[in-house]
Amino acid sequence: MKLLAASALAIGLSLAAMTASQAMPVAPLDQSEHADIIQVYGGCGWGGHRGPYGGCRPLYNCPPGWHPGPAGRRCFRNW
Image (cartoon, rainbow, N blue to C red; front, side, top):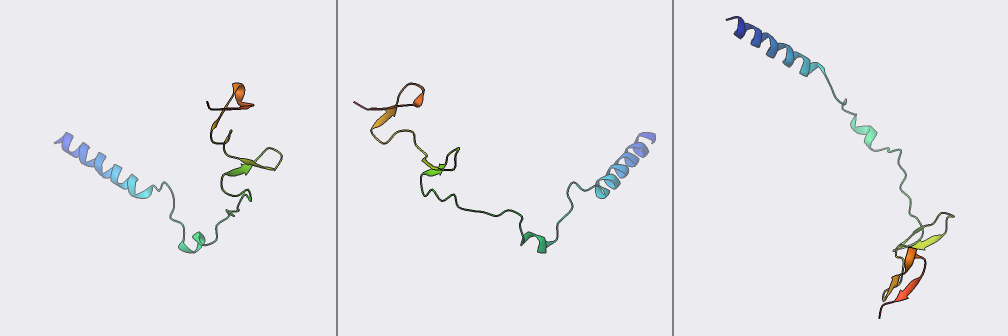
């Protein structure tokens, strides 16, 4: 009988603690319309990205039919 009462008390306390805790409060629906993130386009076009000094660079290392050499500094033709 003591085991049944102790387990019922433990279950009751755990259920009471679960309902009182919230991992993340629910945000109102009107806040999702105004995001703080502004999405912009890089301006380099398809297949390009910005380099360290702000200039456009291609996403690939060598053109088709070529492969990078040692340390990726030069391109050599595929034979």
